[in-house]
Length: 113
Image 1 (cartoon, one colour):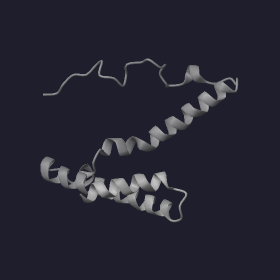
Image 2 (spheres, helix red, strand yellow):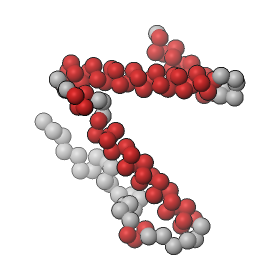
Image 3 (cartoon, helix red, strand yellow):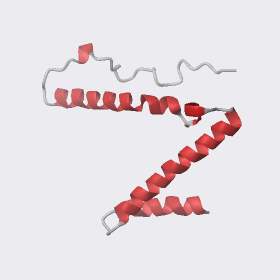
Image 4 (cartoon, one colour):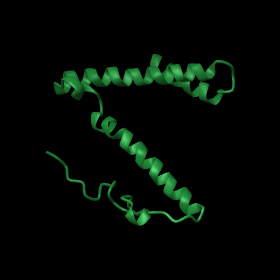
């Protein structure tokens, strides 16, 4: 199918990124996938869920939080680099949880319904 061929082409472009023009084709493929994600998601949410306006964007909650998630990643990486270099960090005042926390697991999952 067309999507399978497109996915294969993207993988091939990643594997052969050093060939002339492959980075442009890779970027074009990623943009196409993003566009399809948006169009199919909007169509689904419009038809199946009756969403309108901004609510039609697939996973809108995630995309609205994305800039803050990126900032958290940068802050966390900064803390890890500082600790690796032996520099004092303000981790005690940080909002990051210790590893092993079950915050992002299904430990507290309650099915809706």
